[in-house]
Image (cartoon, rainbow, N blue to C red; front, side, top):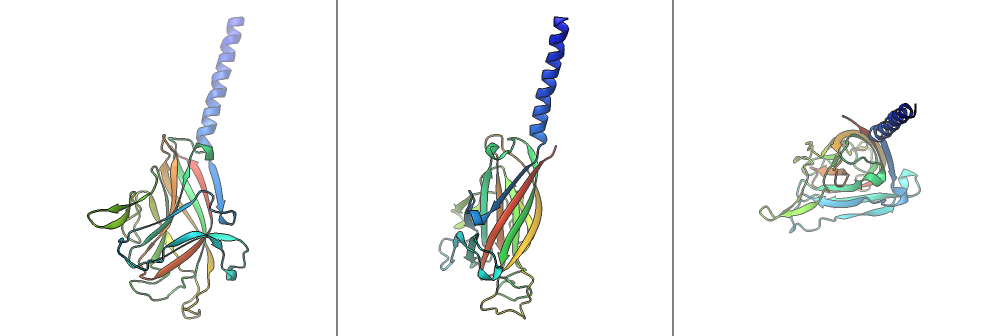
Length: 243
């Protein structure tokens, strides 16, 4: 009788452990970063330009949102002058087990990105339009996205594949859409165009690195040879385990 009881208890214990493991593996992770609460671990960077290029006007940081949005608070502002005709401006953030990520697990990452753009629709510009020629990209990487100087090309490049062209997808990031804000270029003051809040959704698949988790990547790839400045207001991600 005692032996049978021990066997039953053992089966129950194994079942509970299995259930607990499956629950961890199968649970989704949802995180939301509202930049009214500061940077929250997000870091900015710039790539795809040469060191000798002057007046790039590269800036990034938490700033008050434009008054025309009617929202009190701050956003993560990033801007750059695209002298290279290929400037990539990005934000990145690491996610690990402390965020609920299961290391080694494959995830489908669903992004909800809210940002403010002052690029009107249908405008003309050098190299392309300020709205339709600037592409928003999003994705995730098993390694930290970093910028390095290629000594042969004398050019700042990314160490991860976010897509070579402005509108091309890469292994760690794909195209969400452009940053045209829907206001007609014929109806706004092009010397001082207003900002409009936009929401974009996107999905990307990644496997969390067993040694360190994963890195989220959101950025703009520009074909407009002028100044682009956007405010990221909120980035939400849902990581759903996949087989």
